[in-house]
Figure 1: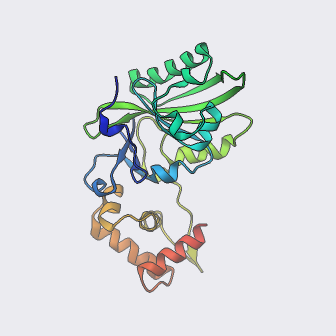
Figure 2: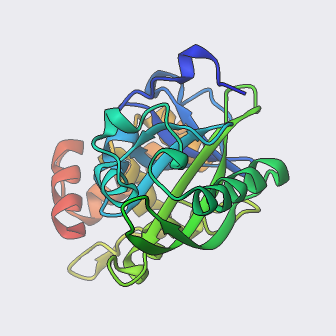
Length: 252
């Protein structure tokens, strides 16, 4: 089954959100009205810059988008070369079938799953992976494909990758609680921001509006503004721009 035509092109500005038992890609303009459990704070563009293998596949296991690391590992010539192709194009048939079967299992069971995988490419290169694969939903909560992350064992940092994947909410198939989000401990002198204050400022630093932050944290916009004001006072900032600057420097 091929996804609707509008899904064949994945825009860089779409935001990755945890939803139901998987993920959704949501337009920035729709973030305040969309149904999701957790906004990862990553656009497709920022996600693709992470040093691990990320990919979006349609229901047939064909590539819709992947990052440069995944292109190199799979054996495609480029990102554009990978679009519309499956692993059968670059891997030994038996190896490709096993990997496609894993993808089908995720879609059939409608659950995030973790696999130990081995890919034997047609050029003879054999690589082992730890893969986390997730259902991908459209706005109507229909599964339209799969989002995956694979870590090449022995070549890419497993601990670093698992930390990042945990931040994305992909290690909790039953849902993601905002309290599990990694947010740095920020303090000025003896004044330390509370978890909620840090969360609010963190999302503002990501470019979200007060209303969007309220939607993400399931609180009122007025409460978000209160947390931001408290954070400004604790960090001795005169305005929001200064708050973002101070928070970003201390978080880096």
